[in-house]
Amino acid sequence: MSGHSKWSTIKRKKGKEDERRGKIFTKLIKEISVAARNGGGDPNSNPRLRSAVDAAKTANMPKDNIDRAIKKGTGELPGVQYEESIYEGYGPGGVALYIEVLTDNKNRTVGDIRHTLTKHGGRMAEAGSVAWMFSQRGHIYIDAEKYDEETVFLEATELGAEDIVKESGLHVVTTAAEDLSRVREGLEKKGIEISEAELAMMPASTIKLEERDAEKVLKLMEAIEDNEDVQRVSSNFDIDEEVMRKLESQ
Image (cartoon, rainbow, N blue to C red; front, top):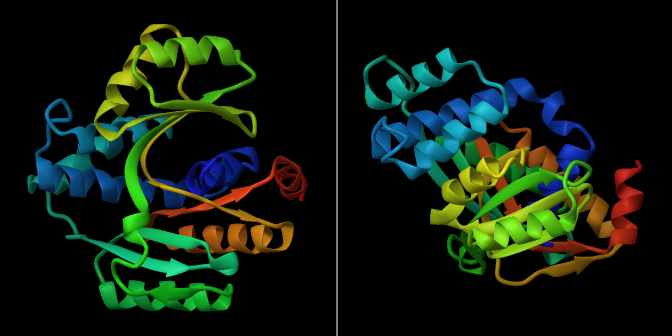
């Protein structure tokens, strides 16, 4: 399991999403606004906006908030103009970090990210040194306690999913980026409840971490995502299940 998916499942397992709901809403509003600005305000013809709106609904964001964010993006309402940036870096154990940002102040954001990396044993990298390792994929998360693995595998495979694995109490369904909404809707029509769906950067290969480095990397990932300008951070680490259980129990 790649760093991004493993990090996502750890956050859900430890309840990190609920603890930071305010920041999650802020990040979702930014993503909705930028998606609407770049591709128009109709989710049916704008896949990125559709994915962002679906994520907002899953997070229980009020419909009025979603509508306002779209209108700010299309210019129907005044709003802050956010710039998209990618920052690349390395963390403990030599893992690669791909950091996606939406900010209204690039100087502030890059300074904050550089400080966070240095504080947690990482460093910034030159543009392009990490990006080549990653490609965009869709991730769909399903509660493994509600649905058995065979059911999810058969239904997702029939819909064209690329991969299905079980990790930390969740079934993680991987799709091509352009198939995310279609596979999600197909699963929902078959009566399978989706915990969350998102577009994410997946690494071509992974680095397996020992417990000491794994703990450091997870703390670094959490610290980076605590920055409200950071939309998501992806990595190429892998962790053995035994180490994962120890970390999840902490």
